[in-house]
Length: 115
Length: 114
Image 1 (cartoon, rainbow over the protein chains, first blue to last red):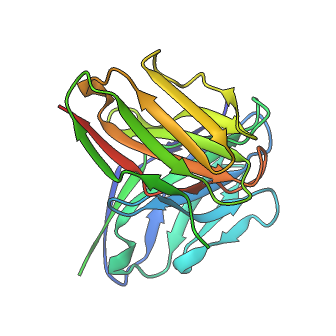
Image 2 (image 1 turned 60 degrees about the vertical axis):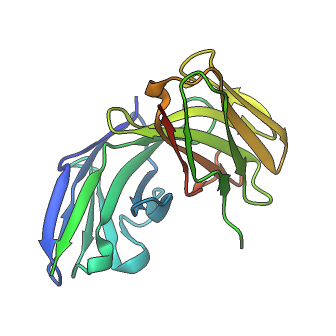
């Protein structure tokens, strides 16, 4: 079965410092992995996706993630945090066992950015 | 381009009342998904439609919940009768096809049942 585990429920950083949000996955086949962001009272916005092409994936707003098969990880990073990055972030894996792209969500990591 | 549109954005109603949530997917997307988000359970898929046909409703919690998609541009999620434990944020998402990515989400409906 497909699953993801987000290792931190809350992360707090200072503006201008690096961001690291950790995600491990479990998959019985080559996975499709995503990071989504949810700002308060908004829907989920796709940050980036991995679909078995390049292992280093660049997304919007300066975020990137690296797929590491040996570590079953897909951590999200950004070199320098901005106040507007404060939001909840979801690591997501696709489950195709039902014949369609069923998204399996992690529990989420709430990112706080301090001045 | 217009994204996924949900209405209402907020709904407050009393226990026992019927609640209807509405969704307009992105034009040309033939896959539609309803999700529920709660603190306890996170994001859960309730039901998936492809070409207006319900394909997977295994996530629908109980018979009080029903969903329809009468045409390619409109879907409803109905709760009757509503209960306080149904309070949650309900999201609709659409994608170009069943195996196509990504899913595009609406801004959600925040439902409070008193």
